[in-house]
Image 1: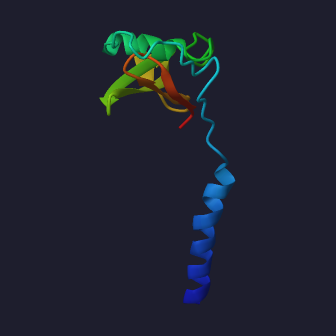
Image 2 (image 1 turned 180 degrees about the vertical axis):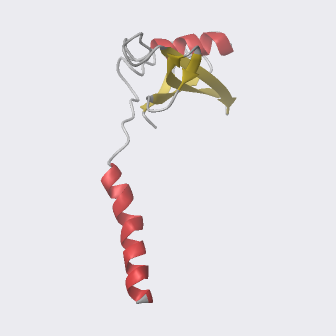
Length: 120
């Protein structure tokens, strides 16, 4: 009996990640441009957030029936920025994040995109 339970557990460990599929990552193109000179001035936190929001699809932050806006949380590490952006819906004057999408945008110090990872 224990062998069957162990085998089933091992199968789940392998099957669940396989069923989840690949993670979509943009590393080039319109959602992840590298159009800034490496010698350009370094961007501050507010400029990085603005740049990250500009790299999202036009309707990502709404407003729409389900999305009222986006909230961005920048984090600096290893001479780059990771910006966590999540959608919210206003309900009774409060931001509600449940059931909505989010994305990570990773930028270098001058604003070149290193990765744009939606839905992670």
